[in-house]
Each structure stands twice: as C-alpha cells, then as structure tokens.
Image (cartoon, rainbow, N blue to C red; front, side, top):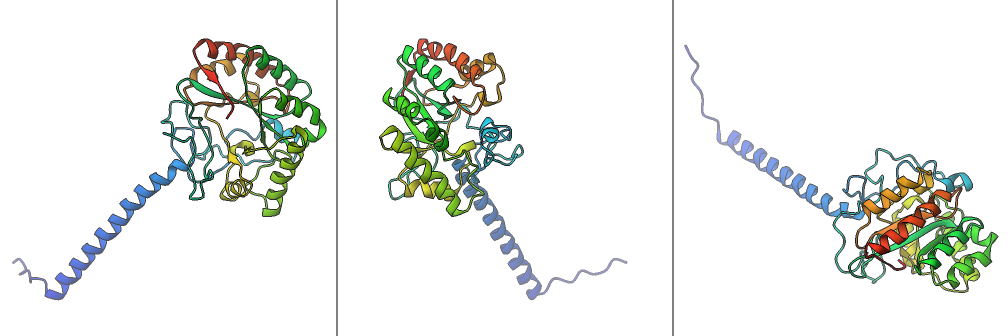
Length: 301
C-alpha cells in the first residue's frame, strides 16, 4: 500500500520560496561578476588576445638579454599567465585616443597602439644606447628618413651620454626605461622611485631635453608603476608587435614576425642593447624598406 503524501505546510513552502529566491540572487551576482570581469580584462593583453587585469612580466623572457646584462632584472616565468604576450596585431584597436585616460587627464593604462591615421606605425628600440649597435640603427634610420622611439636604460646613458644625445639630436624620441632594466612590480616604493627618477634625471641631462614617456622592462606594469608614471607626468608605453629579437631567433624569423603582424597603429618592439643585436640590425635593413613600400608611415610613439 502506498503511503499518503501529506501536503507541505505553509512554513515549508515559505522556506523553499526563500531558498529559491536566494539562489536566483546568487546566480545574478555570479553573472554580473562575469560581466564586470570581462570589462576589467581590457586592461591587459594576453597571448591569445584576451586581457588580464594583473600586469606581469611577459612569458619566456627569463632569458631577456637585459636580465643578463643587469643582474637586478629578474622577472618571473609567467608562461601560464594570461598576460604572457603583447596584444595580437589584428586585435581590435582603440578608437580615438590610443590609451585610456584617468579623470585627471593623464594616461592610466599602457599605450599599445598609436592613433595617427591609416598605415601609421611606430618603431621602438630598447635597452640602449649601445656603442656597437645604436650607431648602426641610427645610420639605417637616417638612410630611410625614418624616426623611431628609443627606450634607454639610465645606467647605459650614464656610460655614454654623448651617444644618447646623438639619438635625440637626430630627431628620435627618447623614453625612460629605468635605471638598470629592473623588474618593477616586486620593488618597494623607494626602489621603484629610484629606478624611475634616477634614470629620468640622468637621461634628461644627457639629451638636454624633457622625457614624456616611460616603458616598463618586460612590459611588467603594476598599479604602483602606473601611479608613479602619473606622478612624473609620463605616458606608459608598451607594444603590440614583438618579434622577440632579444632571443636571437634568426633574422628571417624576426622579419617574418614583423611583416605578418604589423597593422595600422602597431608599435613594434626591437632592441639595440643588451647583447648581440646583429640579427636585429639585419632584420631592420629588410623590414623598414618593405614597410615603406607597403605604404606604412613611421612616427615616434
């Protein structure tokens, strides 16, 4: 004989209603959280084109030449991080201004693209000046009447201020790239200030001009670094095309990477310091005229 089912009491029904309502609230908060996370993700590009709000050094750069040349630069291996690489060249490019603005009008996020019309790109050269390779790059840029942006290390400038001044005198833009190419996020506030301000003072004295941009080594940004940029009135500069020339993958690979990924607004990363840059110079010898022939215009970042 089957048991007779007793209808649930009013109290039980009320409790079930409350539980169901509570579940809907939690579900709603979860969905909202997912949505807001996606919005915040725009702050940091990743290897697959997604974004991560946590600025970290790029993956695979534990053997970055500058970390060998400058022992203080010891970035983490973040090969599993979503912030591993620069934004892909075919990613949606920002409309209007190339970098987000804070309420004070100063840049609050790194600049990954330039915005100066169709077929306009920027070539950036990092980790110099170097007595061997910087003059070669300068000669090449002069040959094609191209201007570039040089992110300089303060200690390198201190060792050869005349070469830094030569870069600026040729019409190229000079950018603060810290004093020793240090990985900035782990530093104390005092260490961070020293890295940025010491480099600023030495480089400005050498080139006899004012610096307006800053590039974090390894592309390793943090809230503290961005805040210091605001305090120093420096635009944080990143990149969108990284052929990883620092790893010396071969001239042809550097050329192929740049030609494949460069688009309107691209900021290309190359190096004139930190080690043997013969592949970089050889690649630029091919890349610059090919990009010019493709209708691209170079400007400083």
